[in-house]
Length: 355
Image (cartoon, rainbow, N blue to C red; front, side, top):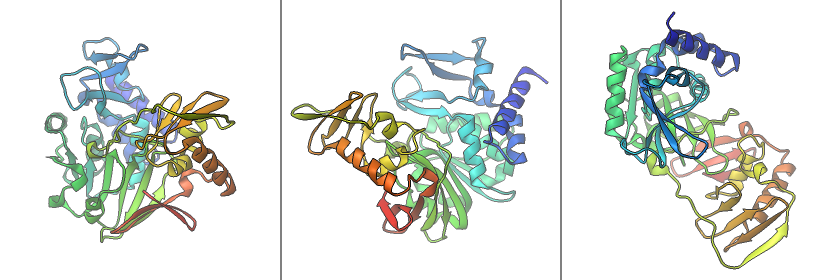
């Protein structure tokens, strides 16, 4: 076995060992599909915050490729820049495995992948269910072209489309499964329109606080119901769904003591974080602050907070923590998702919140 083959096997066994993989077909796919063929170059962030380009000429390139890490491949939608806002990446293999398992796809079923990216995930799908059953779409023509070339070179021939993933690809519909390797603020109606009754849509909700994987069962009429998954998974948003960063404002503010830690509100590992996102829609977080585009803001200073603007965001966060406790401290997997023609909601028992 060559070095790349050994590293692939090691990665596949790692994913199996941590429980991200269960089905044999996905273990075989990760062992067989060469991730390095789809990552001839990528960027890693240095401790300084700068980005360093890594290519096949670097001695540690191959080992880095097969590390269980996300690798950025593009910034600001421009292949020529080094640094900025990441707009394309090869996702962390653990998250890829979790989503592929959640898809519950079987041989002969058709799959639409939204967000072709490097093409690596499309290749895994092709290995598992056959190229003829896979359609993949990306909004960036250069990304789509490169992915198609790399897929074809490595023996995979899915339908590769350049276009707005939010509109799906009706030409090959209906699909049995739809997998979005980008995140969305709400579920695009076209996805459920193009998924047959009983089919599954797996994606990530793009929420500044409390993002999470969801799996929705299509009713075949543009509506569906599903669950938030317990496993956390976060992707860069579908470009039309990106949320601008709001900066903390100036002016008058209040200062008071608090016992609620900022990490409890914003850390994905916190059991409260998902519910906090429900209570603080549109609120974005920084290292020590929260802010909303309406001008409301919080500076968290450990034992106390400063807050200003039209609303007192930390008061809302503390109230939400009390509500969460009264509800029995529900975890993300306790929440449902309901999609109708006119509204989309997160649900918890008889409670519901607009997405």
